[in-house]
Length: 216
Image (cartoon, rainbow, N blue to C red):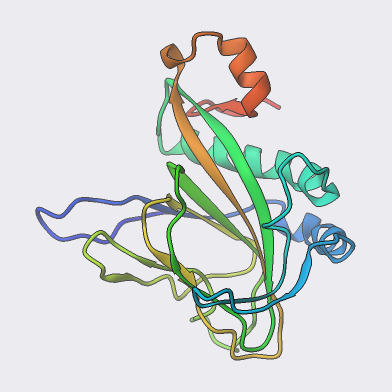
């Protein structure tokens, strides 16, 4: 579903929320690979209001990660489907940027922040605490351009949010004893004619056709 919250004369910031079709099929394997990953354990508050139980955010992109190799094809397929169905950027390419996971246990959180040098950012909810109702307050909270909260209370495991990297967003405090696990990645949109050597650019930047039906 495509969601936008705005009033007349406001700028519109697109936020896409879709279920990853193969989530139930891949969830256990993704979690197993993250469990075996040597990400930083018990990251303490970094002075900016962040407390995350485990993350590989600080590892370099050049380091091989099994979970990335496993999950990336499913995420690429997902983005292609969204772009095609919504007729977004039909003549453009999109580049998959840096990717990382974060795990939140009791009292962990990530304060308001943006993603620099990123047209869009994505959050895949691999695990979400279950509060027993359809309204789940543990997803990613987003602010619009006027600093007003955009609510996504009906978030579920397996959903992926895609939104502009300039929007302030946060992961609220996990008040449960259940683990929240997300995979996030940044994405750039590139006009085809902007690339001098399209073939080389695609190879070096993991570029995928945007706005075209996935045949793979």
